[in-house]
Length: 147
Length: 458
Image 1 (cartoon, chains in turn orange, brown):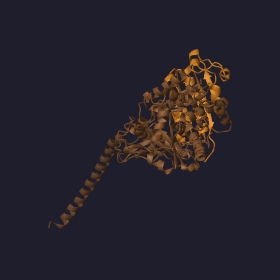
Image 2: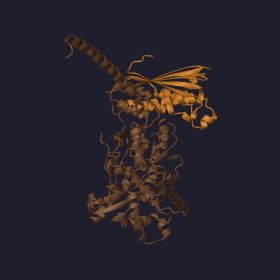
Image 3: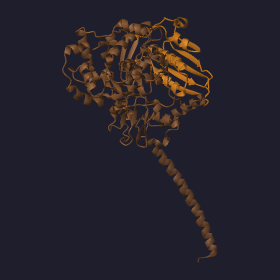
Image 4: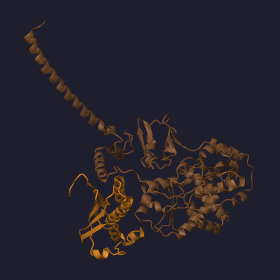
């Protein structure tokens, strides 16, 4: 990873199963973007993508690291988690598909909108997974060239 | 718009920089500079938390003095329904309104009735609304400002129905000017306010239009005189007074009052800024899409918790709640006619003029590349700080201090934990200087000696 001075990189560690802190990371990400002066509509897209990514770790994985990279051209969010991985990615990308438990659904999660929602809000979205090991996501949102 | 009007002023004579306000401020808008509190205008949302905690009453809400009444030929008081909660259970709105008239107002208008109409209008709006949910009540100006500053993406979810106080003032002026043959500007409408933020919503409405209200008088200022004025009000029939209370409107004084009296099933009622932040974060994440309506008040328990009220907020909350229960039990429904409201609604009677615009905080820099660089510097500075948020530097947290330094508004040396380092640096500088000096003086004395030798002693 190039570390030039126009690039801001921030890591966030997420613990699986810790619902009490769920959402903290995406809030921090939103605050960073606000401070830098990113367009509010783009902030919302990134905050939603970050929240869904974060919740996937909280609900299914043991731990994960979210990395936010900001350059004047684009926002990139990378997620690497250690967890069960996804058996069938095509299936997981379908709206409404979820492996959430009843308890999770009870809490309002697991509507099967997570990954599709990330994809919808991203300009570029990549997912790869090794069952039994973990999943990685790569989310890119481009920034308009504005004054 | 760079200039913001705020309803709060700091009296620098009284302020001795105790930092209580700085610590309690939910938007980190207060700094201590040169031993006095200082408000960063851009960040302030006028919630009034600082007023309540100041031990010296050095934070002054800018409400209007009573004398303002003389500027008008006819004056009308519009008490917030929170005023009804300030007195004992036997004292009902009717008596309070008569008391107000004895204080020098030409008339006193019961806002609860307009609140009731607006409740119905909200119901109509909810029914036909198709956009993203939940809709958010605009009754608390602090909440509206919070959304403008911190949640700009939620701005279109704020209900565009005007507040009862504005609608009532607008209509009263129309009616009175016809009745009395006066110009509208000769009629003064004064809101009796439970909090300072209503003052700014009058002086500088968030929608940038013009307010129909001419001034706000603090409930705490009027409380004493009103209490004695009510002593001479003749005792009327309790039952009759009860029958004049609009159940839909009285609930506006407390959090949850609108939802409860309208019997909205899919709604939430939130109060207290900390709680509101959590709920709004959830809305932004799309978590509350199945909720129709959110009633949010910056003060705990709603307007009865305003910083300019007198009675303990739980007692006043309870008074309103009991009143609602009594009216429900007695099946008293002194409400506006819903058909009439629907007619007015279709004529756009209730809608706000002007549009709410976001008011996001200034970024670290206008240039994105520079802003990114500054943000990195901020992280580096923060890492070098003790992170105990002692406040001695004049900023509420180490993080805000780091931000101030990056923005050039504070010096790194303001942090007392940098003092030892500064001493070390200074002492090193000093010893270096000293070394230099002794070296210089040595070589000097050496040359002197040699020259002395040459010239001999005088």
